[in-house]
Image (cartoon, rainbow over all chains, first blue to last red; front, side, top):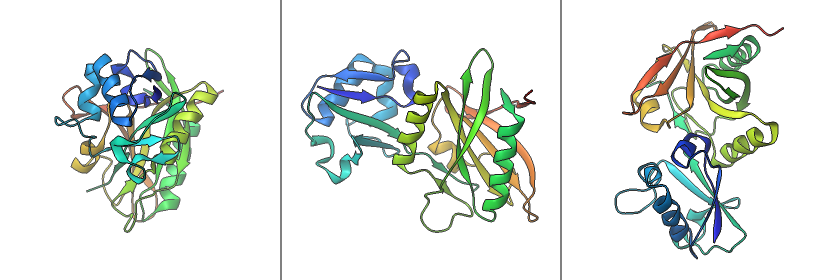
Amino acid sequence: MATIIIPTPLRKFTENQSKVVTKGDTVQESIHSLTNVFPELKKHVLNDDGSIKQFVRIYLEDEDINVLDKEETKVESNSTISIIPAIAGGAI
Amino acid sequence: MTLTYKASQLIKEHASEAFPNECVGFLYGYEKEAREINVAIKVPNSKEGDQRRRFAISPLDYMKAEQYADKNGLDFLGIYHSHPLHPAIPSEHDRKQAVPFFSYIIAAVNENKEVTDITSWRLSEDSQFEEEIIETLIEQ
């Protein structure tokens, strides 16, 4: 069980909910629990094989899961997971 | 979409002072029938290396931006950035990394560090940028 914070641009896929309590013992299970409830969100967060999309970062509290155990990072009932769109661009 | 004069001035000043690099910042306001943007906040350009043609925002700065909106009762409505020596038209690079819902305001800056144009763009359902008209609002 963890709470996932939904970034503003993706809230239209979660019925405008900014926080969703999910099931699962890992980050991956939590995110899959979220996308099972809100399937429209899936293509914005996950690739077809279930991995995290290139332009999305996942944080557990203030840590990038890439410096933890990635998708297999364990979560507790009071954990907070943030989905963060990688904001970038440029003139050319 | 309306953009307050104060917010547009901040964007222009930031675009000018960052020249020849790209600047970037957050946009807040209220999502009403017509979107109202009345707060612009500067963010460090976290792009490593050459920032004249690229910008990025660190994930932690993004998290703070969401928290700022939450604490202040505002809607987080978009991102602004500058195009030094380039028109205020989104590039393919801009489009590929863009997210739905957000307004992307772009300020074109000339060699005299003057902002010559400001435009705003939003992704359509099929992930193409569509320009949104900016109406400047003078606050009382």
